[in-house]
Length: 257
Image 1 (cartoon, rainbow, N blue to C red):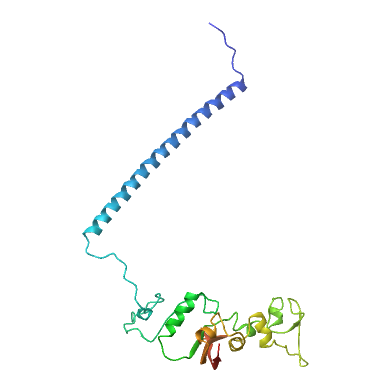
Image 2 (cartoon, rainbow, N blue to C red):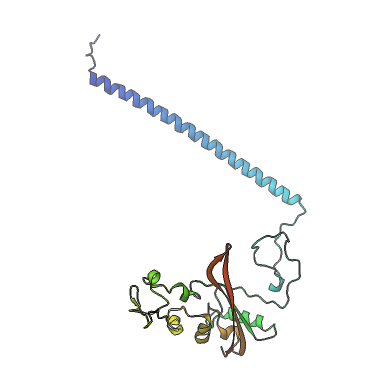
C-alpha cells in the first residue's frame, strides 16, 4: 500500500471549489434542459390551437349564408354621406337623401396650375356638371399664418423670432423694434408680411392668386367670377369655458385668375 501525503489547506479549498463548480454546472444544465422542453411543448400546443381555429373558421364560412364580400363603392361621390364617422349622436345617422347638386373632390395637395394633369382634368370635368361660376372660399382657423400679425406683435415675447409682425432694425432676431414719435410700435405692411408668407388672405389672393394652395385660375376657370370668402378668427378669449371667435366674411371678384 502506497502512502499518500495529507492534503494541504489550499489543496482542500481548491478541491472543494471544483466540486461546487461541477454541481452548479449540472444544475444549470438541468434548468436549461427543462426550459427547452417546456418551450417545445408550448410551441406545439400553439400550432395545434391555430390549426384548429382555422379549421373551424373555414367550416363556419362554408356553412354560413352571410356574405363576406365588401360593399361595392358608390358610382358617384354624391352618394357618399360622409368619408369617416367623426362622432356618434343620439339622433343616429342622417337618413335624408344626398344632395345631387353637391360635388366633392377631396384632395390634400390643393389645386394649383402646377398640379397633376389628371387632377386638374378631374376637377374641370366635375365642375362642368354644375351651373354657376361663383367661388366660395372657406378657410378654417389658421392661427399660425392668418392670425400671425396679432400673435407676433410683442417685442418682449417675440423679438428673438426670425419673423415678427412689426418692423425692427435690423430685421433679424434681437433687432431694435421701430417706434413712431408717439412711441407706438410700427407694424409691417401687408406687402412686407407677404414676402414672409404671413399676409392676410384678401391681400394674398389679390397678389398671388391663391391661399393654402388653391389657385383662383383653377377654381375660377380663368373667368370673371365673384368670390365669397369666409374664415374663422379666434379672439384668444374664453368666456364661461367657451373660446370666443368670429366668422369673417369678404366679397370680391376674380378676373382671369
